[in-house]
Length: 318
Image (cartoon, rainbow, N blue to C red; front, side, top):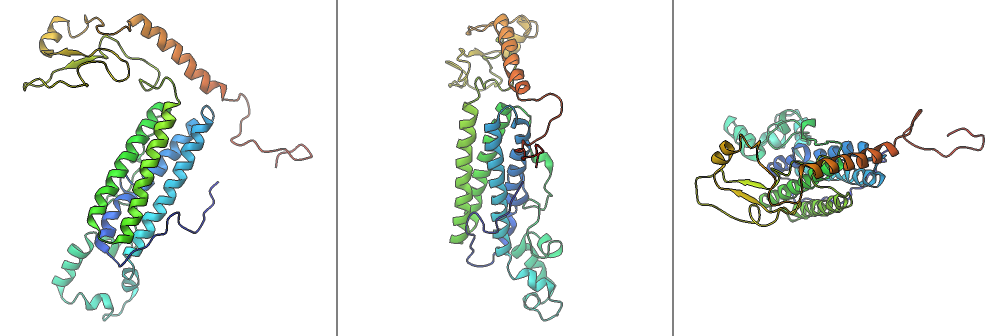
């Protein structure tokens, strides 16, 4: 269940109204890297983790709930930045303060283009936040990434926190309001905190690379294909040992020639690695058994229910 506390997690303040920045801030209200996306992503991911990984379920639900709190903070900031507009739009008098500032067609067009940058505030929401990004594109569930494999989902979450962090960093360049910057700094910092939480959670799942169960073919896992006609550029991504599998990178200088000589890479043999096709198949079977056991062990047979309620004195559940 959810229980709403009326106080915000962070004290939102603004120095003065700023409709232009309110429009930009919509990116974190209803955009692809915003707080609603994060909240829904972690919320959806949590369902599949509840039985086999109850500790990760707790983590995902806690952070999802905090993201809803952050959505509330962003919405409150937008509302304060738009203060005065809502009331003026409700004033039907021709001599209202807003109308006085918009004498003539040119002034009205200038207000919409320069002062608002987002006319939906005027004609749709009446001066309140909307579930769109800063260009007016509606929020969509397509933003949410949930694959029901924790090693995959947690990597998506680490990336999501990274994108949200940099978005806040960019947003701060477009406001001079110290109070708004204070709020954005708080939100940005929580993205850094969440990044580390997800990273730590991923480290507790062993093995967690490669993501999922299947290990990958050792004939191709350490090949680097030089797909450029420019000078060869070497680095730790194509020489030395690979970061996870600790295999020696095999630099294929002429991919076209390699493809022809190996019948479309079908005749390639593992090089620079101790892994073999046989060992990979054995590990596939071993990890498949481990993961399925984890899930099945947490699944009850017969009648099931989400919560376990303490029984009352007469033996009946509450």
